[in-house]
Image (cartoon, rainbow over all chains, first blue to last red; front, side, top):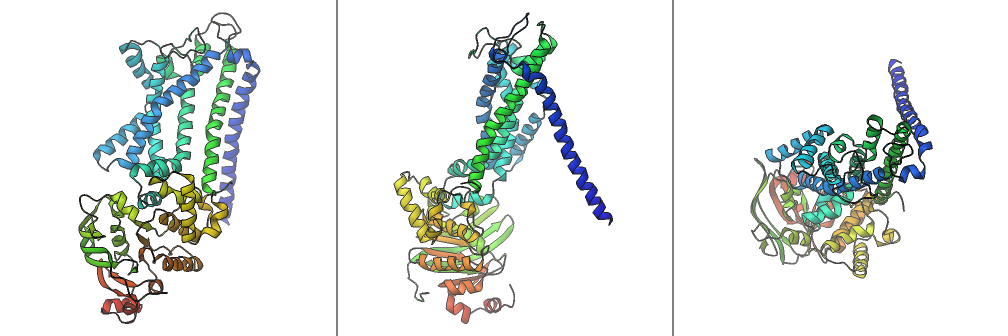
Length: 286
Length: 258
């Protein structure tokens, strides 16, 4: 009797938690979106910002967010995935490998603002670049590198050894096995990792305040790597703390809503094709 | 179905092979000769070393870092543990079917075409021919021909194992190593795989590890019995099962242990 009651209590408890989380999330989304969406006119989304008068837009910041994201992925993906493949498939089990793995784990837990200060010292001061899109993207890449290494290693390790054996027993080289079996098989995991990293890069502010700056180029869109490039997240911080414009509050609300929508769209864009591929490989769809 | 006379061309010769996992010796002084175009069965209780020996024949044991091997294995007269051995080339010639069916999470077509593709065949027309031929050889064509582009993971266990055999045949090996290929299959699928081995031995040399003594008796020309890392006896299957020369073999096949 008692165990049945406990079971019912546990069931109820976990349902409650599920609904609680869902409730908090919906309330949060509703709060941000209901305040921000009314401000999302085309002029606001694609227009240029104003320094002193009302009615400024966030077009350049939106562009910079994606430009810096793309650059940081360009820098971090080859190294992150490469190092993950090395750790999972090539590295021998010895103290050196353990040291590399330990260092990666430690780097993954370093607060982003510390990376920001490092990037500021290296790119802004020591190399004398000043606030640049390039410096911001490189520092972001450093932040995301350890996460990518971990995710790649973990997903490759999750691929059953029977696939490796099957490929090698057909006379494949190790590289053919990695490229044609392991990477396609672990693609869903890799994509999840990349989504995670991309979302974090879009939302990152501390690093970019120190490295990419809080101003935007007069030209938009400006592909110049050495221009300073404020992103949406940084703009949100800037507008609520230092801006002089009278409509700062509504710009902040609009920016917050836009940021959330952009991250959602990005996640869907990456996740949907990946899920389709996964279902296809598992034989669930035609 | 069985041929009692075995062709005399020697395909594989194992000489004085010792194998260690770290400090533990798993195989002792194995000497074995496998004639071309025959089926050889390895039998013995779990942990006797029969699968380990099978895996030395195409160097799949290389994947385990602690394995140490002394002695030699000759395939077509060449020592595959020699300094100049091309392991990739060896495994193309000496292919393996595993205990659990392990199709790749790809379409049936891509599974079969995987081997030919990595060996450089690109033209769709050539691949189509190989896929059809391999599936027919593995007696899977009728069941698979209408779903070539569907995932291989949607096949039943028995179909998956025949797919793995077809995938192996597509790279045209000379020797097929089968590591308990039917232990995860139902009786009907097992029968199909057994019938398949009979058809394949015309063209291939087959070595099959099995737990099932009836299976060894049904399909093999010669049988080797292993116990605790030692090859106790190797001879013609009929003789080994009716009139074994070693007391331990007799005890095992009459069910006194194992």
